[in-house]
Image (cartoon, rainbow over all chains, first blue to last red; front, side):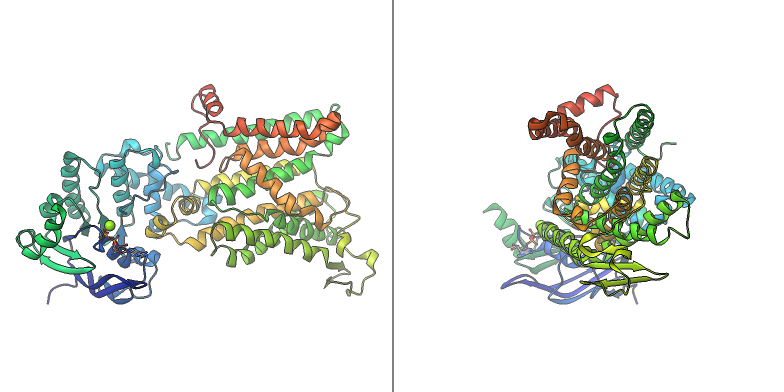
Length: 258
Length: 346
Ligand SMILES: Nc1ncnc2c1ncn2[C@@H]1O[C@H](COP(=O)(O)OP(=O)(O)O)[C@@H](O)[C@H]1O
Ligand SMILES: [Mg+2]
């Protein structure tokens, strides 16, 4: 028997009124796997992330996280259970510093309460010091420790995307969901990001599921790729299999050229 | 140790310093020829400063609009004053009795904040504003129709006096409010309350809980995605804000010989909101300056008689320019060499 996968969706689906945005969605992500989710615009990729993180309640289907059914969990509970994400439309805490953004990712791993904070008890100093060091450590993955005191909202676009990844990592997830992490980045930034995603997987021993438009990035680092179109899976396989699948070429690549 | 961002620490230190220095100067002046009308304003100024600071916690730090903040002041004024009068015999020390009364006022306002917070904090934006407005009015009606007396134990009745105590011997006498109060509030107590309020707000903002509160303000969906429960931290900010307003209400109530519910109406809520907006959301020093300046102003303006409202409007605009204008802010930033840069959380 193989070990339980970190994430397992079965026949997941959601309707918005009459519109079926996602249907019959099956996905298995193994431990320490980097998996890809691709498809044309409006295919339902982001909606899958919103289902996994309970931003939307699934109309049908099950989501198992590390062997535990997440049915009935809230966004907050799912995060505590081990799913962290970034957003296609960047959602940082813009008026707070870069360091505070990362510390907010650490929120559930900082161990002092309201009173210790108000009265600055020893636990406050100890935990804040540890959180500060941890934040700088995490920022150093992307060489961002020098930006710690800058307002998150004032960062350049690429840095904001990287900060979102750092903040998600700070929650100590079992699986990291990245929604178009390379959007808006130039080719050299993208290449660097690919390297870093691999590094993150290796250092933290976590799984990564990423949505991407940049085919090169997906093909380059994803071990398994799922292709969706109109809310349904149209193909699954390795980069090579996907690239040569006529259905994918027609639905995805063909459409893109049209 | 570079634990807290230096900018924030510096800005907070400036705020504490401004309050301490103002207190010392005013205290010296009040012992040397301050007009009695101005002296009489010192405690109300402190109360309004705390009101503005506490509302800034809801509006600036949590990012929710509240139009009923005077309701919490009212709760604090009535419950705190009642406590002080009921304890008049058992606790002869004015200072101690005032402190206990403020704790009582803060506690009851916190409870009111919690109760109103349960429905209110599930609402967003305009709905929240409307419900807080209604809350302020409800509190006003309750205290207008409340009769409370003390004959060894507390006797309470609503709508008419059924406490079994003669009308004249009641503490809270319905529409007539509380009368015959022994004024025990002092400027020193007001100063201490302002300092405590600042400590609570600054320490909160720079702690794990405060960060979570500001995260909700900046991006609720992102906050949930990193495991921050929305209702818990909204409630925390709202209740702390209410408690501080309650203490301010007690300070205010115990500064006069009578307290009536009409004093804490919608206009008062709006006035406090004006302090916050003028002083800048999330900027505590701004709230202090705006509250102090605009409380004292009508008094000072008596001399201008007919031009009073005109001058008031001009000063309002000036305060707004000084506290919110980026150019002027930039000027002070350079003047204090990077010392300014916003308040607790910007
Ligand atoms: N909250 C919603 N209400 C209605 N329709 C939605 C909602 N969220 C997504 N959709 C629809 O679901 C489909 C998939 O969208 P999305 O998942 O964002 O696509 P993408 O693959 O580009 O990320 C789109 O047709 C979109 O309009
Ligand atoms: Mg999308």
